[in-house]
Length: 168
Image (cartoon, rainbow, N blue to C red; front, side, top):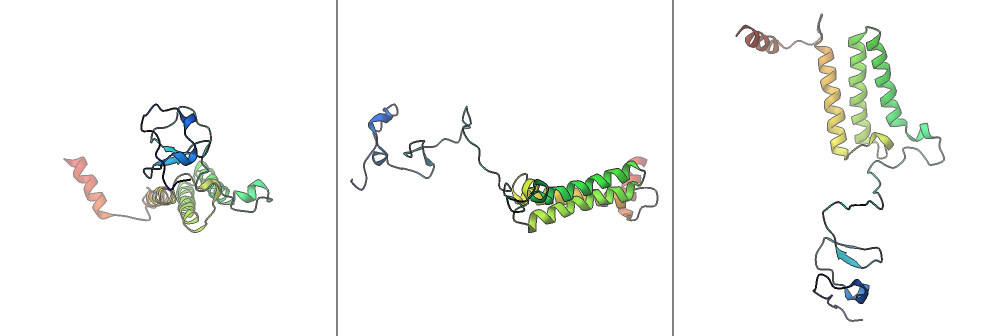
């Protein structure tokens, strides 16, 4: 075997004439094909998907021999808390229910940040999940605190801005 053998430069050259040793990897975007020989990979999506990549959060939060609910405790904790908040909201305890929903989303962001394997709580990249869960949770908490009647959180500039837009 020589140190470097060149592959035929013709784009339509039959693959049967090449062995894995005959193919030269020219750039970083080459990837092995089914037989293990390097080939030029494309950034286009394939017409038919043959396999799927495991998502980043696809690991288990508990050992594999644990029952399914125990393996998915982070998402179950967030969903049960949100469900309790929705129940309280349906029972006319709006502020407490919405605060619970917002707190559950913020807790989901904290879990996504601190726990390495969160199971199905991981939807996208860690950064995107943290920003999405945390941002939505904080917005819901702020809106619940500003809710009428008798808001617990008041911004005077917000009242002035509302009067400016309505009075004009």
